[in-house]
Image (cartoon, rainbow, N blue to C red; front, side):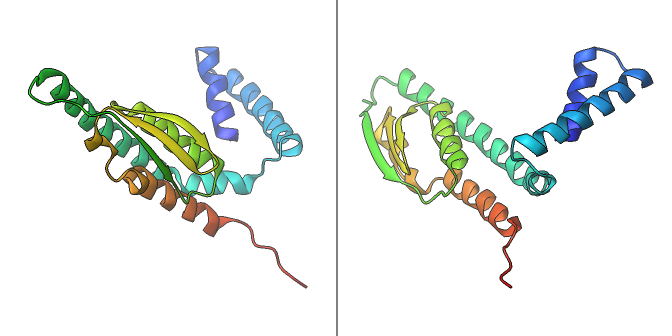
Length: 164
């Protein structure tokens, strides 16, 4: 988080000088201290996030690939007059534990052409699909599998309480 603050400081200044760097380093340190002290953040969370960077990059790459594939499929539906689309509402549950993971899944579904997340309540999704082919296997999609891996990594790194 400290590095992000410092990089943003340099970017927002629009130029790099050693003076800007050192002032930014001090301000970033103060801001990082404030975030840790008052906003329930810690360096351990930074380490956990750093361990998941590879998995998050992989997730984004998979998301982009799925968006491309869905675009091609939707173009096929539009261009082919022989094929009649059959819209479908799909309701499914997921075993994702973190609220952020469930929100990322809902947004990923909505970003993919031909599908829209209508509602997310707890761990239950209601998704509108342009065609029944797009609805197949949604509860165990590649998005869900990747988010499970990211969550599993986060739980392994979580601090453990010791009983005395």
